[in-house]
Image (tube, rainbow, N blue to C red; front, side):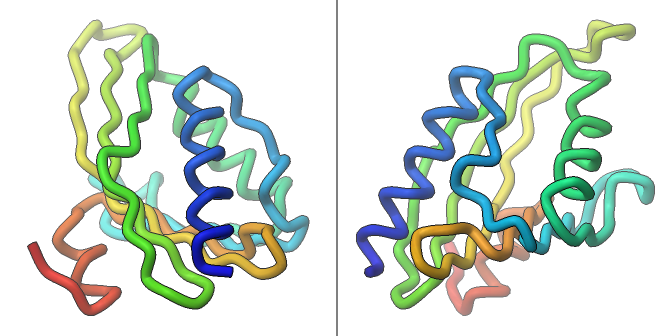
Length: 133
């Protein structure tokens, strides 16, 4: 099951890289959280697809030319997969370039993502799963 979960997460990032933010791989009752966001309004916890996508749209709205790249996918065994990703963009209004390394922890059940925790600091993500760089 572990390799199947890695495959699901890999497909999510392939979709995101092409700008497709589909709910295809997410459970309707998914739990999403952002940990350590740089601004308090970006941090939080959302339950269900509607809340998760609302939070995602609010995050994406001020960004232009967003690119999301999975730099490393780590199979944690069982039902968890950690992705060390890089997001690059520029502010729509300011034009300021953004280059941020993130750690995303996915928990899957029956091929669906039931939990998606996004850590603004990769070191914190690695620590949360018992790893370090």
